[in-house]
Image (cartoon, rainbow, N blue to C red; front, side, top):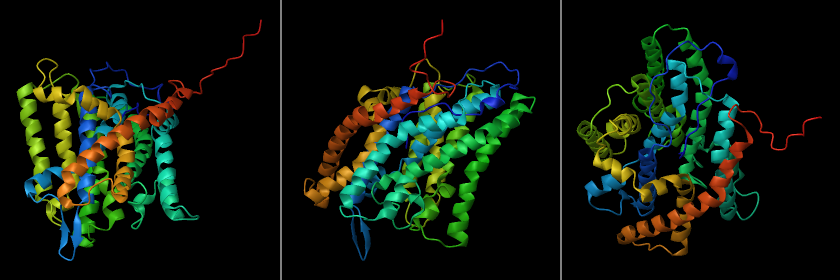
Amino acid sequence: MTSTSTSAATPTSTRASAPAATPKPTPAGSRNPELQGFRGLAALSTVVFHVWQQYHVYDAQGAHPPVGDPHLAALISLEVIDLFFVMSAYLLTLSYARAAIDGDDRTRPGRDFLFRRATRILPLYFLAVLLVWSLRNPELPGDWRDLVGHLTFMHVFDQKRIFYTLGPSWSLSLEIAFYLTLVAVGPLAIRACRRLRTRRARVALCASGCAALYLAPVAWIAVAHHHLGIPHTEWPVYFGPQARFGGFAAGMGLAVLLVALGDRGRIGARRATAAALAAAAGLYALSYFSEAENIWHTYYHPLAALLWFVLLYCTLHIRTSGRPRWHGLLRANWLTGVGLVSYSLYIWHEPLMLALYDSGALPHSRAAFPLAALIVLAAATLVATISYWTVEYPGSLLARLRDKKGRPREFYPEPAAR
């Protein structure tokens, strides 16, 4: 999960032959307050979901959730990881889509894109991994495979250790895989589009590429589940990028769609609200009907990615006048504030929850789940806010070591010779 975007990238050497084209109106970028609100909601939902998991009881009859009402349990257990994937891919693909479709070539070199992503993600992540691993491995060498796996983002392929140290960080491994895919595939798509004469053909090529990237994981899941009979508890099979890339592909497709449409076909408040409610109902139904190994559980994430696609489309491609009322909630200062610190919240909430639980600061009774959720939410949000301003934000300033063209900045230029 990431909370802000940077422009996507393409090598500087590909810029000279851009096709002559009139730039079209483009969708809102990373500063869209509704997206920040979605980040806040998703981050809070993730915290509650992990507290809910912590208060499960497991016995010979299976898992028993702390909430007996299946309708409420379906709401609490609704996974939002695909929303983060769709949003991240949408924001980071925008500049590629503009360059490929309209020749609006304001992309960054690939190495600069990766450098900026690294300054955004790695300082806080490495600090958290080293701190949490050290506390849980007081004697060396400890579980060094766990440490190496997390520091190299390869723990998503480790059946035993995928959820060690920072449990939710398996999804960050997928983000890294997406960044590498984007800087490899994006420039190729731009070059291919420059050979096409019509805008419609360029849009079709980009859309078909996104569709292929979406369908490949669906095919992988189908073969793994139906043909090979691999159970869902084989984490690397169903949590790796080969199974979860559909969320990123949906976000890439959203960027292509909104760049292709420009200002055409923007929807009004009523239609946006109706479609958003239908998508939200679909997400809830997925969570409610999903049970281990059934069809909804097997294809939960590809289907959820499509529904988040619809919900974000209804958020981004609407008329600027007469916005729906639910946009006001997404723009609320408290919620966008949580969205601002959502990456720090994502990093720290699980180890903090476990520390509070093990120390007795959280009640151990299943009936106390609501109180435990409130305590963890309050403590994790406080820690995330401190973490953002002391680690995450200062670390992101390292991006200023390079200028807009990806060249190292000269902070102390030599005086001109007289």
